[in-house]
Image (tube, rainbow, N blue to C red):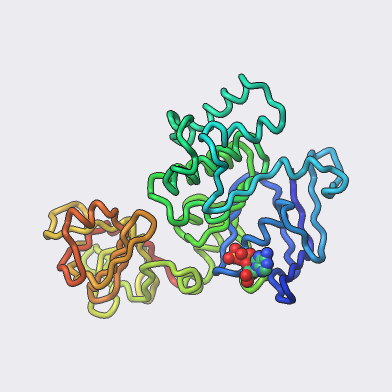
Length: 356
Ligand code: ADP
């Protein structure tokens, strides 16, 4: 199925939320819709999924290549080819099995087929054995996975996911990302509203940047993230550990220097550059480790906040470095504000580029 949106606008109570949005969803793959809170991501997805009406503009759906474009009035089945999942998702009261079978029961699918399909999706999302559990008693990560299974069982062609991994444990987040990639490989279109640039980098093919109700940047994820204005992305979306510095040579090693801090990087560049480091690719250690990682930097914990099953620890290593570790690691190491600790990371974990 193909969606064409032209000049879609929407206001709530006189406040313009979306202005002249035009886009096409045609090729299978992952489309990331990024932008600050309140920029209209949810509203746009709800309109594309036909759950909300636009004030003006044209929305067209092509169900099969041979057919002309349809609107909801001419082809009421369009909505059924799409699924939208909010986060947190609302579970029906009842078992996981009941939640998952619901959409198929409504479609009068035979019981045997329902059970088979339900088993397949549950297995895919590592939820086998959860059939009889009460859906509302599950953890946030499990609920999100059940919500995805519930949507997938009806085999939609286009899946809209609103911040699907926000505030989830890392295992559920990873399973959801893997499922998104599998769907894309199987020819589905996944539209993903997200704040997480690392996630965009990992799984998205295309990016739309929505700001103040307007798509101000769009393109392939490669172009937008790597050739676009990195500092802008970093500041706008709060990409952690984004540094402006200078690359110098020491023998055949390359060192990235920011003020008094320096660390080894792998790059062909020299001189002024930007660097970023994914907080999940840094290991914390209370002792100076001997390891194959090239960078072992001493620091002091200045802050730690719990963020969706992880701890985001800020270290002062001469500059502020964010590190994401599990709560179990945090507890085991007995860390607290003021603790002395080493940040360990590979030279190849640092992404380095120059602003053109
Ligand atoms: P995002 O998903 O990017 O955070 P939303 O689409 O949720 O943005 O919201 C965009 C703006 O529209 C916000 O200012 C929000 O308060 C407003 N909004 C969204 N839905 C409604 C509604 N049903 N009634 C009134 N205002 C709404």
